[in-house]
Image 1 (spheres, helix red, strand yellow):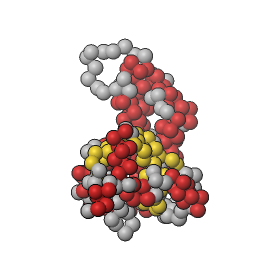
Image 2 (tube, one colour):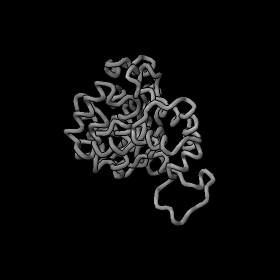
Image 3 (cartoon, one colour):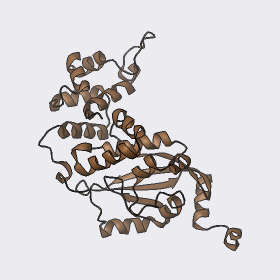
Image 4 (cartoon, rainbow, N blue to C red):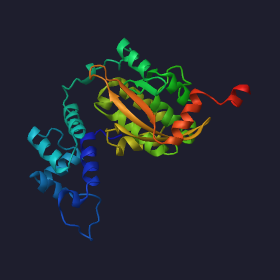
Length: 282
């Protein structure tokens, strides 16, 4: 399993940028996706050999100046720049993110629970760094309870998506959803944190190649928003717009809120709150 997260991130970002995005002319003979290493090197004003060393993991401690130049060349967003910095710090043997071996927090602050209460009847869930479900609204219970995600004594979203066969029927875009769950686990120190490493070891056994392949290829930068398709067993197809709200870094928890992405989904979610009279009579 690869431990070269910095190189993976730099390579995937390089391959995702078209020459046109950085003002380079199109070349019909181009055989590589995105930019060539030589083009990134020219844009960042570093050597091609140095870009190669970074991508291959032979150098993991670039200077702040080089990081800034690479971030500019790769057109990184503010969130991607922060992720790049975390990856370089995680390669430092003295780096002690998240309190070293401290288990990701499961405690829920009263104010956070009050926020969830205020969000009712919207579907919202509080997750920790491992993807454990710590608290949720009744709207989330109505949405995800019937699909089986909350069946476990300690529900975990990553474990459900990657190891429960029901997830493939529930998520029409299962491949993308699985990518996002692995990206969320890899964000930050990943295997440098013992509890995350233990979960990764478990998923290596229980999910197998579906997990290990993604660890090798998916950079640790999950989407903060998007649209999730769900095949709900009670109300049918749903399109849910989601937003991820990060809590303070020392807690390393996040709230995920699901909202209807279209009028059909809004009507279907209303049925979960107030079932039709004939259903009540039955």
